[in-house]
Image 1 (spheres, rainbow, N blue to C red):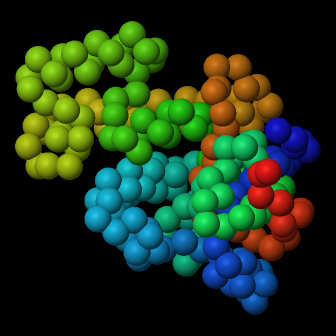
Image 2: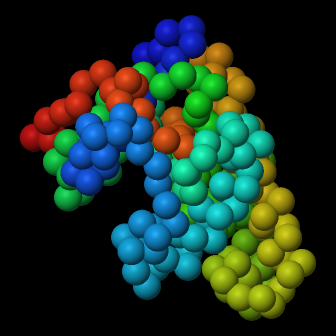
Length: 198
């Protein structure tokens, strides 16, 4: 993952619509309605995770006017899901515009799972929950079990535990870098078209 002292090299896959808006306006923002439309019946899971992330992201990178939800970018091209796009954008993003975290921790948030200090703590939490006849998704997608939900939400704060170290170029303990961006700006784009994998 390349970066200068004030930018970080990231990769993201975006639709033709986003590319057209960037060409026209020089900046593009994501909205909640796009997430609802993209994920359909699965939208409640995504909106639960995204809404929580947005409430925390604002504390690290101020939200610009017009932004509702983040765009996702990655420290390695192979991490980008290019299903249906066939191309990716290469971005050099100012460090003060990106919220950086371990993509494996974000996967746990997206699965509405507990983020432990380590795998042993995560297994212990899941066993404790199973003894009560519950699963993490049951807890997170209903209004029942508020004490369990609180514990899971508190564990999600660990998502940001690597942010400062990644900004400094220290990737120790990070399985892969992911970033949340409030916006994509045309001046961040270094190479617009990255060929699809062979």
